[in-house]
Image 1: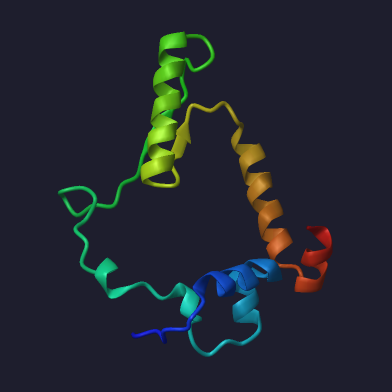
Image 2: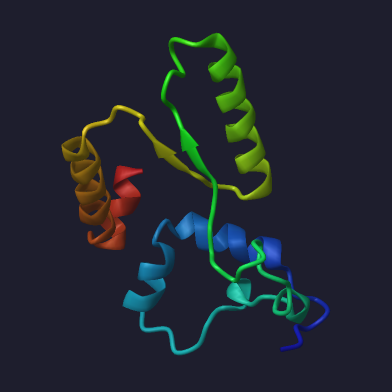
Length: 124
C-alpha cells in the first residue's frame, strides 16, 4: 500500500494517543478499515525470524538473587537494558509478585478499558 507524500504519521499517532481510547475505541466506533498508522512498510514483511528455528521467542530475565548478589544484580541490569533496547519488552521470572496480585492488576486493566471513553478520559 502506497501512502501519499503529505501523510503525517506522527500527527495521526499523536491524535490517536490523545483519544485515550486505544484500539478498542476504534472498534467501538465501528471502523471499517485499518487506520494508516497501523500499516507496515513492505520492507518489514520479509525479515528473517529472530531465531534460526522459526519459533518466536523473546527475552526471559530471571530476577533470582537480584537483591543479594551484586554480581548477579549487575548482569540482570545489563540483560534488562539489552532486552529493552533490542526488543522493547521482556518477561520477568522469580520476581516475587504473587499471582493473585498479578491477576487483580490484569482485572483492573480490563475493567478500565471496558469503560466508556468519556469515563476513561476523566480517569487519566
